[in-house]
View 1 (cartoon, rainbow, N blue to C red):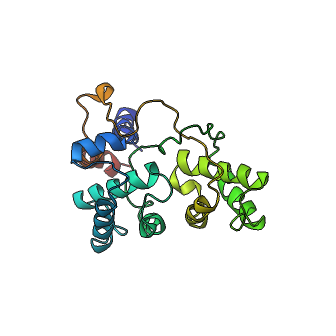
View 2: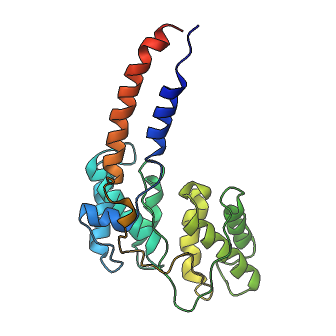
Amino acid sequence: MMLVPASIVLLLSFQFAAVLSAESCACEAEHLGFAIDCTDTATMLTAFNALQTSSCATDCSSEDCTLNYYIIQAHHDYCQDGEVPTEIEDGFHDFDTVCVACEIQRSATEGAPDCPTSVCDDGSGDAAYSAMLDAGCLTDCSPEACGTNFLTLVAVHDNCPHESLTTAAEEGLHDMESICTMHACNSATTAESQVVCDDHAHEGETTTTSSVKELTVNLATGFLVLIPFIALL
């Protein structure tokens, strides 16, 4: 039995890994020609409606789906409670497991402390949401326990992959945000603006969309190289 050369396997692995780091939403906005503006609900709704009418929840690979998802995801993740239309807050999660995301953190709340350290893979966000429901925090969020669990939920939501929370907890957070206004924290780990593209370290690199297209070509080429070896197994 002939084995596939390790060099080929490593080559394909490196090509795949090269696109796993998401571009910042600010840079995608600059490259694709849209603004991250929390007051521009009309643009958010236009993009959201385009995602729905183009069936992007089923296939998000087109350039239009990619652009419109970046628009709503950037605003959903960056803007404060009440700045993103309710239909987007509720419908966003129809697309977040299908579309490629960009990177952005919630805008800072002046005077608020840092959020607690988030743990993305232990279910702490979902547990915090369940504890809030049990404690009646949707009616009165002033107790300390409500605040502690709310900040844990916010930290996981803002700093972890979207799949770290169930859809119920994701959507429930948006309901809690309007009640728990007395509790706030900042998730941003940098003083740099989240809406300014600083891509000096990535000069010469392509955008996420272009990288994915390049990856497809590279993988196809790689598999063509592998075919003669696989045939001998």
